[in-house]
Amino acid sequence: MNSRSRRILGALVVIVALGLLPSILNETDLRNFARFLVLVLAVLGVNVAVGAGGIVSLGHSVFVGVGAFAFVSLCEDLGVPILLALPFAALISGLVGVVLGFPSLRVRNSQYALVSFGYAIAFPPFARWCRTITGGPTGRTLERTIWVPDWLPLSDIEVRYSVAMLTVFACGLLATNYLSGRWGRSAKAQRDDALAAATFGVPISRSRSGVLGLSAGLSGMAGALSILLFPYANISEYTVMMSLRLYASAVIGGLGSAVGSLWGVMSLWLLPMLGRLIGLGGGADLIFGLSVLLLSYSQVDGIVGLVREMRRRMTSGRNG
Image (cartoon, rainbow, N blue to C red; front, side):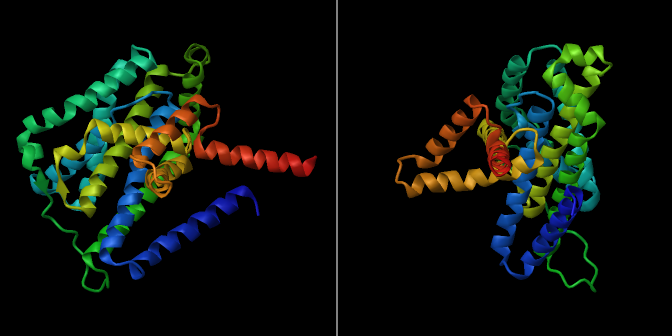
């Protein structure tokens, strides 16, 4: 069995396993697990920007928030059906990402990191000012529901979970194909050496804009799906701390890899748990922060890089 067949088989196994969860978990656990999947999608957005485009973004909470509020506004104010509002909310977030990413075409990546950090700081007060869309400090509630045929034996939460699961899987497949395709290779080329890439005909501005648009769109879709699962959007959730945690999760999991986003989100749960188990005061933040520092200063590309290195050593050991 070649590598492609193994990937297809693995994807089918994952889909079947996720499809069986509604019959195993109760409603609360099912919502929480779906939230886990949605958070993976938000981290994947950061991963695309940093890993593929080399664009260090510390403001992805903005795109998650834009996707969430755009989704509520489309459904409640304009009467757009939920299943149609999801891709439109992601598209709006992607366009915002392209617009806010214009400074990245003119400044160094380290400077854009500060610019994006400024966006994250400014977003909550700006959103409070846009009361018509965001509801101000009180937030907004999603009242609309997904229409389900009578012959379909699924509860409301099972339908919402199924929509979230399929959407996350489709977005992950889109991001994976992008990273391995021509546009992804162009983005990585300008990331490694923009001057050399331009010499060989890579459109630098278009490439970076495409990366930022896809990155923001993925995070915006995560924001919309989070509201689908928990129908309430509040400004206080989309803060600078969210941006920092998304970026840290992408670094820990492994930049430039869709699987790394999954590992990164798992680290949000597992590393704090480890800190509590070993009895460290403030262990949740301490263990998580130390992990980010160690992986940032080392040559290992996150958990994915560690796994690859272990495989390489095992293979070389057997061959030797």
